[in-house]
Length: 194
Image (cartoon, rainbow, N blue to C red; front, side, top):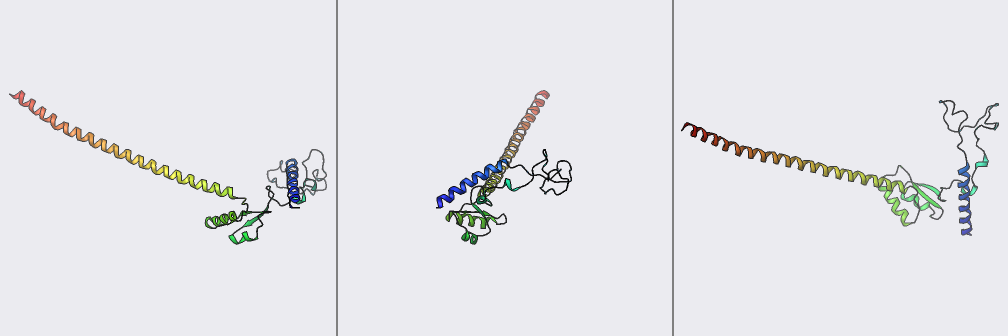
């Protein structure tokens, strides 16, 4: 019995995918003509309206023929019923076989971590866990960038220290040479005078 239901929902989901692929994007009448009109769907109601009268060459209007199977209405593409969760207590009401959870965006990191651990214990599917992973990866990337920056800063400091040390050594060498030259010049003067 349960297998038959599961197969029926899978089949219905496949039908819904096919119907959705053929479904046009319904746009408001003459939204392509006027900038002031958005493309958000509005039902045409005028007496001479060509979209309402379904005149050839005009965009399709919304009707029940584009609807998916009744069994799949309101289901997530994965086939689970979606439940919004704000805290750990909300997980008690979730049936792990037919329902999946989506953690609310207002939940903080600490509570989010608690919800994830509890949901994994109960084997509940989490629909927006990918976003959490991406956030963690982004945080790790930021930390790596900070580490790289600190390494670059330390490398620059070492280079500056090395440059100052080299300058000091060069100055010491020039200091040592100058007195020697003076003595040599003084000796030459004595030699010239003699």
